[in-house]
Every structure is written in C-alpha cells, then in structure tokens.
Image (cartoon, rainbow, N blue to C red; front, top):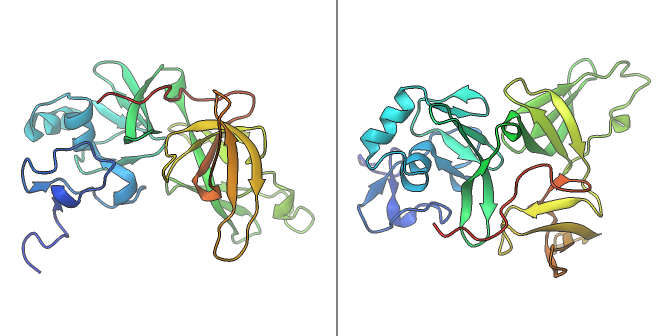
Length: 256
C-alpha cells in the first residue's frame, strides 16, 4: 500500500457526508484518529475548529488553538487535531468561554450547537448494551465508547434485571467525572431526536414503539412539535427528556 493508501489520510471526495468540507478544493483532508466515535459518525477536531467554528483559516492556525490547550472535549483538554468528536460530546473553547454540543442537524449531519455553561456540565449517553462482570456487577456500555460500572449490592438476591437502566435508555452523566445524575427511559411520550437515516436531526415525542421481526427492523413513530407524525428505525431514536428535552436542541436547519 502506498503512502496515501487510505490509512494515514482521507480523500476529500470520499469523506463522510456529515463533514462540511469542499470536496474538490484539494485531494486530501485530515483523517480522524481511532477514538470514542467511528470515522463515519464523527468530526476531526481540525475540521470542527477550522471549517465550522472558523477559529482558524488554515490547518496551522487551528492546530495552534489546540496546542495552547484551549479546547476541551467532555471536560478534558485535547491537543490532537485528529481527535474525533461525535454525538452529544460537549466542546469548550476555554479562552472564549464558549460551549457547544455536537448534535444532528436536519440535512446537515453533525454540527456543534451553542449551549450555556450550565448545560456544558453534563452530557447524554445512550445505552447500547449491558454485561455482567466479575462479582455480579453490571457494566453499561454507552454510545460514545465509555463504560459505566453499576455495583449490585447483593448479586445473589438483586439480579441485574432489577436495575432500571435498559438498552436504548439514556443516561445523564456529569462531566468530566462521569457520575450518573439522571435517567431517561426509552418509552412512549418521552422526547427524542433521530440520530441517523433520512430523518436525522428531527425531533419529537415518541408516539408508538412498533416491534417487528425478521428482515424488517422495529420502528418508532414520533410526533414532531408541529403535530406531524413520522416513522424511523428504532435504533435511530435517542431519548433526550421526559416532559421536555434536557438539552438545547436545533430548532431549524443551520445555514452553514
């Protein structure tokens, strides 16, 4: 494999559609490093800083912002321009006192959405699966690659099924210490956003969960704020609140 054989760099023309870059400006762009989010579901920090937030006109300027320790992701300083930021990550520009949450935007893909400092103290993570580990305790694996250990007081008399956290539910975590401070069940009447598919970025209340078997996956119908009913795959639905969203959501399609 040659120098640019797909491992070290990313061709602009084949970059994920969610990246807001000029496809034919130059041949190559930065490739995200392996991290908490997959390459197709994340933005390299360099792309976010330079192309979206425009805190630098060139790669060199964007890298300088990072080298000075001005960027935090989920409360931790990140210097690597290839570090992948993805769904629900909280990004802080320390020097400017600005905060953003990475969210899906209709017809645009993932974008950093401005939030208040109070909201930057937590993030929402969806439960992807649960496993019992040594000692009978429960390990919860979340959508952003992190794992949370829930200790069971007495594994013999307190089976993991008694713990209220279920797959597809959402946990509200404090950052950076990762304490569970809230729980949003995946159930009807709760508020959710769509994180993939043709309805990516749209939001509404879960109206009905429709189980299906065989080649057709289960679907969810949601009621948008304007009363429109739409359906999407169950795996694309991310609960974000019970009576109302617990995060600032995108109210309209961004221009940029």
